[in-house]
Length: 209
Ligand code: URA
Image (cartoon, rainbow, N blue to C red; front, side, top):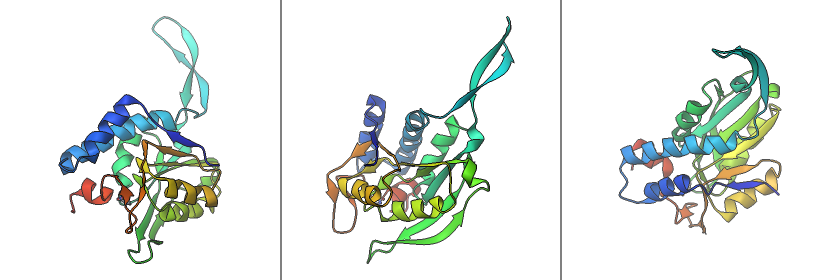
């Protein structure tokens, strides 16, 4: 079973509530998503390895731990995943960034790929896939399939909202991939939207409603 990390921190929950409101402007939605991503980055990177390096404080030398951000690859699933990227990078500025372009065929709800660009040396890197909405799970599974083909050290999936269907789909195909989310909503409507959800995340981030 996938580990599902449901991030219940009050700041995360507060910001998510404000984002869900239909009257939240594009500006507000984008700002809150950015802030939320920064808070979630803290949880997602909790188990990152550190190594001690020699430094000098004003008083004396010491060995002190640092993380190697270059080993991380954030992979936003275009286009809504871009809304989480800056918040993550503000915490791990040395991370590499890959991109996966997928759109959902409205008739079949299946993911169709149109862009894929990753850093080299993927076998030495830990991948963190970003998509605000884990809904049917079809795009997530397609993205994980593509990334895993490059044999990275590990893969995690970060979203803002998910639902039991999305978790089950990812679990069936990729039980080893942990999911980090701020909420697990009731379910999907006939168009594959999460209920109660927050609407179309891409449209709300980019103001294309
Ligand atoms: N994608 C979205 O943007 N919203 C949903 O509710 C489901 C998928």
